[in-house]
Amino acid sequence: MRAIIVNSPGGPEALAMQTVPDLEVGAHDIRVEVAAAGVNRADIMQREGRYPSPPGAPEWPGLEVSGVVTEVGDDVTRFGVGDRVCALLPGGGYATEVVVHEGLALLVPLSMDLVDAAALPEALATVWSNVFMSAELAPGETLLVHGGGSGIGTTAIQLARLLDARVAVTAGSAEKLAMCASLGAETLINYREQDFVTEIKAATDGRGANVILDIMGGAYAARNIEAVAINGRIMVIANQSNEPATFDPARLMQKRARYWATTLRARSLAERIDIVRALESAIWPWIASGEFRPVIDGRFSFENAADAHSRLESSAHVGKIVLVP
Image 1 (tube, rainbow, N blue to C red):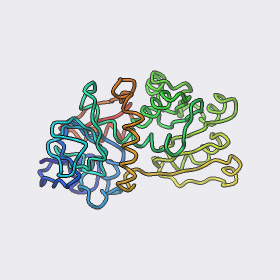
Image 2 (cartoon, rainbow, N blue to C red):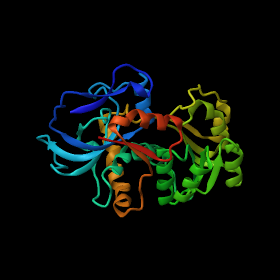
Image 3 (cartoon, rainbow, N blue to C red):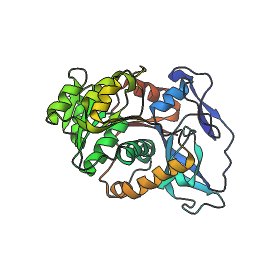
Image 4 (cartoon, rainbow, N blue to C red):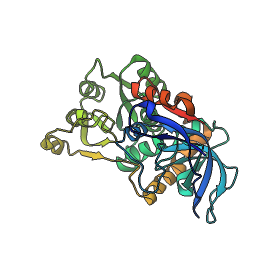
């Protein structure tokens, strides 16, 4: 099999195609011939040497794939050879084949393009586990999404609207805000020109957002607390600002709010399987019906993986980027 490996940490040019040994299939595993792999910021961090694969996972990047099952382990009960699936991975998605526990895979409806399905697992699992399982966003509440034009953002907007919540977003361009509006976001904040604290309070009659999904981390910590409502929940899933969080705990206490930071990749296998099962139950009917669709910014060949990473790092993308073998 072939994989996109990182010979030495560095920029996009550090990505290189190489032949690697085939992976063994365990009793509860399935082998998948990859149709596409999703590209995530965690892959960039891994390429830079800051986020290595966990023990037991392949050393090359890739947290999600779609493809066709070509082999099943002796104790697999959910899938058979020939099934179209997408899967959440601890690593190793940038390859022509992956081996994954059956509990981390989902059937791709025949109504959906198999390549596009590679954009589903990571964003859906991240948004669902944070916004709905942990923060328990309720119908009628307001969700503020930072980075509304990202893969996470476009996913969060759609899910919140399908569950009858109101959505506010921040983004850095009119193009991104227009996409967010087309997906159902009502409050559109250009963070380059507007203060999101002022805008979210104006949009909610001074109450603030009930839930904030934050990818910026430290730089937004204090302002998120000002923007969150009483009894609100701030879910921090990344620190793209690369700054420490500095805020007054008393202000958080006054709001009776929660400041909650999480990761997905580091969770136990059992936890990740629980999240995937929740996706299957709660979201998969919307995918089968076409009510939810991932927003795809672009498809890049494996040979052009460096260009895909450059596109993501530029933050010019809207939605998800996928790699195709």
